[in-house]
Amino acid sequence: MDVLGHYNYWISIVLMMAGFYMVIARANLIKQLVGLNVFQTAVFLLYITMSKVEGGTAPIVAEGFTIYSNPLPSVLILTAIVVAVSTTAVALAIIVRIKEAYGTVEEDEIMRQNEE
Amino acid sequence: MIALHLPALQVVIPLVAAALCALLRRGVWAWLFVTAVTWVAFAIALTLLAKVTAEGVLTYQMGGWAAPWGIEYRIDRLNALVLVIVSGIGALVAPSLYHSVQREVAPESQPLFYTAFLLALTGYLGITITGDAFNLYVFLEIASLASYTLVALGRDRRALAAAYQYLVLGTIGATFILIGVGLLYMMTGTLNMVDLAVRIAEVGPNRTVRAAFAFIVIGTGLKLAMFPLHAWLPNAYTYAPSVVSAFLAATATKVGVYMLLRLVFGVFGAEFAYTLMPLGEILIVFALIAIIVGSLVAIFQRNLKRMLAYSSIAQIGYMALGIGLANLDGMIGGIVHLFNHAVMKCTLFLALACVFYRTGAVDLETIRGLGRRMPWTIGAFTVAGFSLVGVPMTVGFVSKWYLLTAAVERGLWPIAVVIVGASLLALIYIWRVVEAAYFQPPRDGASDVVEAPVAMVAPMIVLAAACLYFGLDTRFTVDVARGAAIQLLGIGS
Figure 1: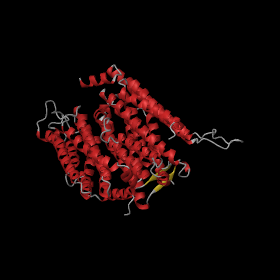
Figure 2: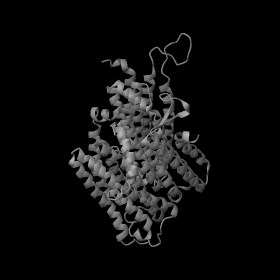
Figure 3: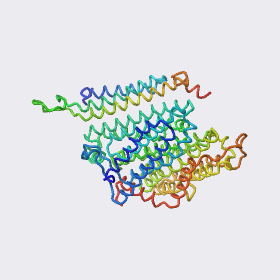
């Protein structure tokens, strides 16, 4: 079992789970959003790392280079980054309005106010 | 010439219209524009369905790039039906938007509300029409971001908290789908769904493919609010503007179910899902819990929007049950219920939008005695409500009949008992409302309540009539669903 040989995937998975844990465990909405971003970025790394070919260069045709990395996942992730940035923007906009409406960004405090 | 490009126009027209709509600063113009665009989209969807029924599968190469490399739009019976549902609901909700939005959305947000509505429509149509797994993720996020915005525009501050919760869970769901698609790309090097299906069969069911399957099922489960992943749904539907609840209840979760069907059966195949992975068992167990718990919780709600939201969780359970039963009748029942539930729930939420427009609230107290004051609204609510229960001659009966047949066919009698029992629970929560509206005296200060404006009542009446029509004449829905089910399960007709 080649565990260390797949270290790039391990990094991605550890980051992914750390972000996921932050989303679940934190009550502060901003910290949840940071967790969500870490989670998404880890998935981007998963895509990027799978496209890397050992010894391969950027896929530009040039003399003396015959092995190229796969450019498609990078392109896909460029789109996914745009999506993630938009998500963060919408989330921050909602958080600003939550702060205006409730005067707090702590989830438990918001839930307490909702029950009143 | 135009006919050739209809699949692209189905998505491009609402997308471009959304951008133009942002320039129209006056609410009434934006509303007329949105209504026109939704009807054009509906007309295109109907044309596509007619073409698919007559000629078979339609494909469209986006930008002329050939299939496994370029993005392909692929329309068969299943997604042609879902396109008709989504655009049809959009076209029928759009006329009601103006009055309801004026009542329930802050004035400065109203012009942009229409843009968000069109973007959500674009996204849901895009998810449905595309044949490319990554393109599906992008459209999913377009639809989801627009939906979070629509929910957040509710006047109650709890709408904001609900929208944030929806955003976090929705993003996790979409990212899970992204992980699943990535793992599949890792194994096969392709993103085209038809190509994926061929290559996954070649690769065989190794651990990466199984992990991809799990990620995709959980991701779509979050999006379609399958028990126990439904936490975002009750608050989002309760605090969103009423017309948004009507639109989302009839489209968002339905497109979620479609995604599950498309990705699981179109990419992995029925044998992989049912034999190698325990999808059938998992869906049946969670669906039964959803049906029982969702219906029970709905009975105890005083807020009628929240009651319908819990009822939605139960109804989604019926669709999941149909898929889980893994036979032809079950699959037909699930797909027909997808259509039927969209029609019924949209009618019910639009009726509540009318009640809110006139009274400013939608709990059991405000609806007392309104049967005389708002005869059309309460009438439509009653028809759609009894349809939800599954009374014969309504649409609800048709899908429940297929589910019952499927359960009996498998010899699973307890499931048949649950289906019938949960219908009685639905009767309890619908009857509470009908009883209050017709047989209880109006509360004080309700004497000046009159029927809602025509623009709100007319679409609701059309939908209520559809609840009855498709209950009597089942040829259209069942024929399309049968064709789709045979194709999904990969069995010979």
